[in-house]
Image 1: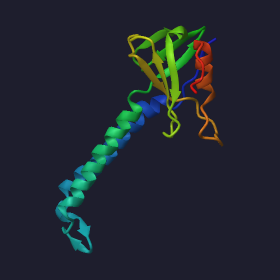
Image 2: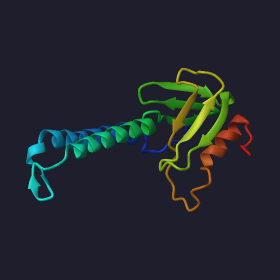
Image 3: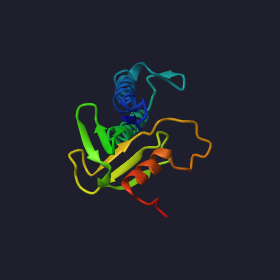
Image 4: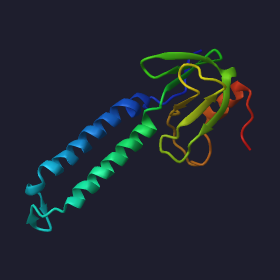
Length: 160
C-alpha cells in the first residue's frame, strides 16, 4: 500500500507559485522605481509621491515573506505500510508512525496545512507540514480526515 495523503498541488504551491509571484510582483515594484518620472498620478506625469513607491515595496516584502512562511515548509507525505514517506522533492525520509507526537491542522489558511510533530529530530526536523488533498468542504471548521487517520495510526487521542 502506498497512499499519497498530500495534495497534488504541493509542488506548485511550494516552488512554482512563489517563484512566479516574486518575479512578477518584484518586476512591477522595480519598474515603479525605475519609471518614476514617466508614471501619471492624478493626471500629472511624474507626480507620483515617493511614499507610494515605498508602500508598494513594503507590501511586496510582506507578501514575499508570507508566501515563504506558508509555502517553503511544505512537504509531500505518503503512507506506506505504517511508515510515513516525507519528501521535499530532493530528499525523502522514512518515519515510523510510532514516532508521531502530535497532529494538528491550521484550518484558517486556504491550503489547510497539517502539521505532524515528532518525538525527536528525524533528519527532516521535529515537525513536517503538508497540504492535504483538496476536497469540497461545507464545514470548514472541521479537521480533514487525514488528521484523524494519522492520529489513529500513531495511537494518539484527538485533542480536547
